[in-house]
Length: 242
Image 1 (spheres, rainbow, N blue to C red):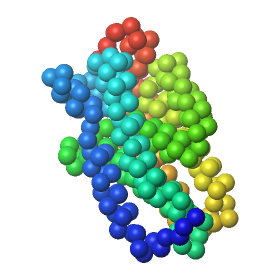
Image 2 (cartoon, helix red, strand yellow):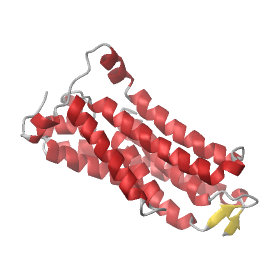
Image 3 (cartoon, one colour):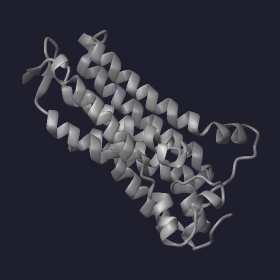
């Protein structure tokens, strides 16, 4: 492993964060709905995200939105990973690629939820976060794809069985956050108080907080028994929800 001084590369983290933020500002739900001569922000829940797109345009369009947002959440961090792979911060065993990819990933999520291009009113970040973790986990260990797929399938099954789309999505994100947290703990157990390691865990917590905070109204509605149900069964038969 080659060593890099943070003082020599700190500005690259700022560049990566800013570029990733603006990547996150690009909203595929809005683009796809505009192509269909509609504005998803004025339909259903008004949220420009996968769930509302599925309800308004069907599962195929919802699936397309999900795929695009997942790629958006994962591609910037994948590029950062390959650029800094094989480097550690000088005097530590902390991989530069670990911090770089999550600076990029979380910046995309911030841009998706609070896009300057949409007056800071974007989506709720679930699809992009799922993409972030899917790319981040699988780029290091190919076998992680099985764990990621298992969590994604479990999330879909929960939504299908319970019809609680928001809660199922949040549980999926939380599980992936926990998996990455465990891997980082195992990797850096001897350096848990290192500033770079602390920053890694703070980024994971920040992303988890952002997605849960973006769903605060859904959580309140769920606790009050007023949460909108999402029937995958109906959507799979082409029945759109309002």
